[in-house]
Length: 100
Image 1 (cartoon, helix red, strand yellow):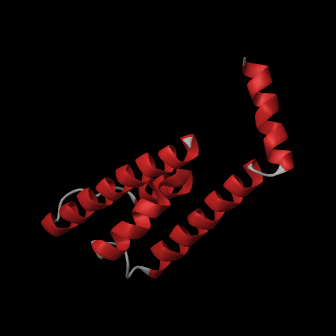
Image 2 (cartoon, rainbow, N blue to C red):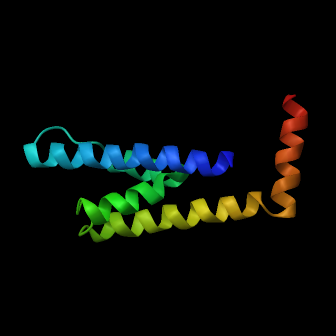
C-alpha cells in the first residue's frame, strides 16, 4: 500500500512537472532540465511521465529522450522487483534493524 501511494504521488508530481515544462516550451522561456524529468521517472514517477507524454504530446517525438525514459522505467521496475525478492527483502530488513 505505501508503495502504491508513493507511485501515485510521484506520478501526479511528474505529470504536473511535464505540464509546466510543456507550458514553458510554448512560451519560449526557461525549461525544466531533461535530467530532472528523467530523475522523476527513475524514482517512480514514470506512470505520470508516460501519461503526460501521451496526453500532452510532450517529449514524445524526441528519440534520445524516449530511449533514456524507457531505460529509467526499466531500471525502476528492476529495482522494485529486486526489493521484493528474497535478497532485496533481507537487505531492507537489515536496514530497518540497523537504523531502528
